[in-house]
Length: 457
Figure 1: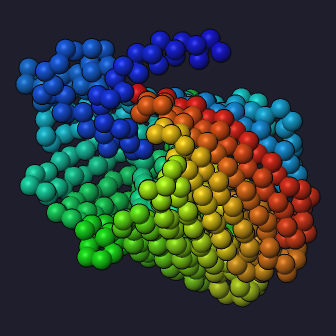
Figure 2: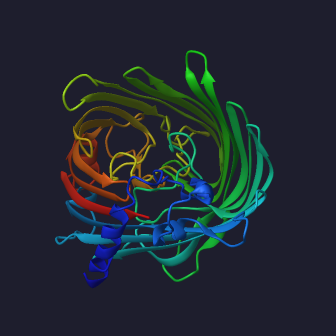
């Protein structure tokens, strides 16, 4: 509590600068404070923290920042009543601090430390707890960056985030964000950007500065984005490669080499927003050939002329599962490195072997307060495959029943952002277990609630 009270003077000070600086980004290395070089206003501690010149021309400078997040969660019948139960709830805290060094136009280095703690959590996983480690440490070498053209080479430990974050994400929802060690080439021209990368996944360990590259989990690919495309607005086209030494699906175990080809069309048109994506996967797991796929639609219409600006949302996705036990094929979709809290922070199911139908309704109560309600219905795609967590670990096998209905989930949350520095969220989730869950385990309904407080600076 004392540590939290120490933040009060910082919060009061930051509120003064709320309208003077651009919004923070999810990828903090994408922020650019070089505009402060020409800022003639009087220096203050926050301006100095965001732009600290190291030479007379101000072409070499340092920028500092961070995030602090506290969360309290309580779950009744976690994991549908299977496994140890916690009657008191738990507190998650996450601290991220970074330093960004720029030396002229052609060199940049970015370093970020992360500490993720789980107080009162029964048997916390690496997703919940990582005491203190080097989360990111990379160098950028800029070869071209002028006239709408760019060519940048990035080497080192880094976060990866692409598109809708269905397959490559920073994993913001869970307590411990994920990163990768490797090399990325970023290029672009006018309305097109392209990334090419080769990395090893960084395994989180519950120690101090002991996270390591995992040679057994390799991730590579290319991601192209085309903007201002006639009629469809924006389109992504990508290839992602993945190698894992020890995969474990309901009907396949062993070395996995998987290739994903995908495309995404997204944008806004008037009061409409839309995001459609399709992915096909091939490769092999041990001696089984992979043939998996997914397709999703996420759309919404916002009534801007109506009080509270209600938005009706609709999302549905079909995600393949294995059709036949014991054959030479595997149709289970692998979401690779998804955003973690895929269907809400309760995170009861991952995007494999699933049909999901998800209507929602949101309101802008005030300029800084939003209220969201959504209802999710889940079925297994294949009755011969089980259901999986977001990291593809098997929750229940497929042979407990032929019934496909998993359950229904209702979630509501209130989000308050008084300014760009502060974020608060109060949420509640109720998951009604249906026939498949009841046949596979204890089958109890889940109630989950939580409070999030976050500070960006």
